[in-house]
Length: 210
Ligand code: ZN
Image 1 (cartoon, rainbow, N blue to C red):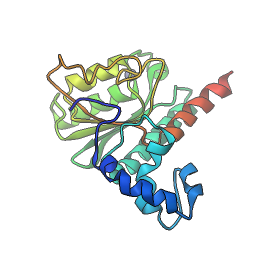
Image 2: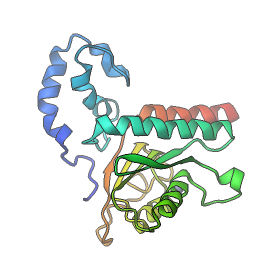
Image 3: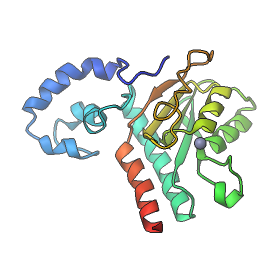
Image 4: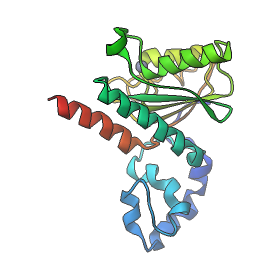
């Protein structure tokens, strides 16, 4: 599936009715919260990434994506406390978490020890297969060129990430590796899932080091 900023998804298709609901929603404050509590939030919370991050590739499975991304965020925070750049990843297989990690480049003296690479390796080991069918990779920040290449090699069917990385993102920010038509394998991509929180973890880490 080719990545497109405005690829129609079920959520986008529903958006007309949801947006019209927004215009009469008595709880407009919820838009600025990632965990809206207003009575109608369960219906319109699906629009939050679209409203906060206009260029997000909206997830058609937001309800199941949010808890997995929370787990990836927990890995990112653990990495931060270990002095690593706080990026976390979760590899889900048949709906269950198979592998989880944050970045380990500093601790392992390994330039390839990005969170995504670690969970891909662990999942392949556990599945005894270097092709990761029926999986989804959740990562807090847009993958780099190395990780995008690994996603292709592993034939990961789906990638969900939080915040874009304008300095090195290889899904769409700097390069569009996953949607390159010369590649046989095409990855379904969703972005903007808990993007604000993912970016905040990264920003506070670097702010504390200045
Ligand atoms: Zn990477």
